[in-house]
Amino acid sequence: MIKVRINKSLMEGGNVFAGKTASIPIDFIRPTIKEYYKELSRLFPQHADKFPNFQALGSVGKKDMSGDIDLAVDVNVMFPDGEVNPEDVETWNIPAELWTAKVSALAKRAKTASATELGWKAFLQLLADYINKNSDLIETDLKKIQSGQMFSLFPQFNAQGQQQDIGVQIDWMIGNLDWLTFSYFSDVPSEEEPLLKGLHRTQLIHALILAKDHSFSHTKGVKDKSTGEVVAFTKDEILSLLSGLYGVPLSLEDTNNFSSLFSWLQQANDRDRKRAIFAYLKILDTTRGNKDLNGERCGYIPKALEQTYLSLLNSGQMTGKFLCQEANPTLWAAKNNSLKESLNNEEKITVVIPGGFKPPHRGHVEMINHFANLPNVEQVIVFTGSTPRQSADGSVIVTAEKAKKLFDLFDLAPNVIFGDVSQRFKKDGSTYENPFMDAVMVLFDENFRGKNVAIGHPTKDPSYAGRFRKISSYLKQEMQANLVEVPPADTTDGLSATDLRNAVQNNDLEKLKEFVPPEIAEKYFQILTKK
Image 1 (tube, rainbow, N blue to C red):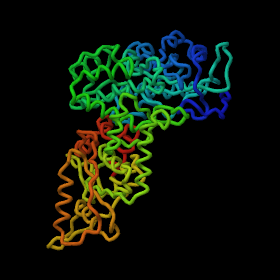
Image 2 (image 1 turned 90 degrees about the vertical axis):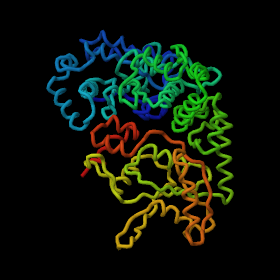
Image 3 (image 1 turned 120 degrees about the vertical axis):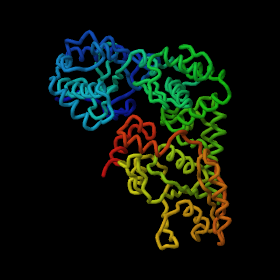
């Protein structure tokens, strides 16, 4: 079936349907949603009364232009008990046996998903496929469907109800309506700081949760990492949780936007406030959730935190990789001037990092990239031995070969390389490896004569620098390189390679996602469990 023609010359807007969407004007939103519901009602007449109950999320309708339209879909509106069952899917033009087969197929690949999650994912995949085959107006993306998300493309309609030749991305966010409307909430944009979006408010909430060893999900609520239990899944529950964690009463009005939430945070004790702000700036430092004034994607730093960010940038704890050139000109200039200076002098540094990394997790990668992104670091050399590590029951064995494949899944900086690990002889003629000594020996390598070399380590292991210096002073050789120091890396706490191996051993994919980015979790799991 031929889909509606979309003008591909307009490249602005949604991410999933690149080249087919543009930002939608505020006066197009209501007629576009009306036509969208009309088409859904044609496809599924038995459920025509459900679609008007979908609720627009985020900043939709609150600013002149919106990049896409997010719709909150309450599970209890779609199905009486919030769960998909064979009888219900028939009313959506999906054969019950086809849905049952799809659930079984998904269950074989997703070992940790709940029956409810599998049921929803199977339903949405079949629903999307039906829409694609039976609608000339709606196009869905079949590959990116999750148990709580579906992405669709629909033409824009103007205020007169006339169809345009450009589309808008319309996303279904499925779950608990109370939680969805809180987690995706976006206030009216700030006139003083137009790039200060609802995203900044949500990322600050995320940081407040992370700083207290909890995890945040738009669709699953807040989980206590120490117990694995969901501790907040409604507005009232998260307000109560954060009030308790920070010792300061938090109201719903306090969470309206970044400014109100940041003002509330000033009442917390100094330690909690600093930890939360650091976690927040770390999130902003690695994301490009804004468009700069020149249209380039970037990560905007709120004015209230520019000086804090600048201090962390100068100490090497922030990368400045995605700074907005025009919206954060002071920070951008500080970052790029320091880069220019480092390129014009001979103070470049090689950082060596020894470790097991079996397997590597995001804490390891954060540390490695911290050093790789320092302005005066030329390269980072990682040394890891070949001795395998295994899970508690021995079922998961991590070899050096697997560790390298796992590293490839992460977004390592381009100036990171892996060094050769030497075989050292024991008195009995057998051999052993010592990655730490291989890192030390870079100081004595003729290839590094006159160059600056430093050891990289996290802030939680301050003894590494002293040990590195001490061992190098004991060796009866002439040091070729200059031994220097770099700021240690302040990375995510509480990540253990042992716990990671055991999570894989237990087929706990959700636990695994605490150690690695969710988008690589399944591939990561497959590499580790492949015999």
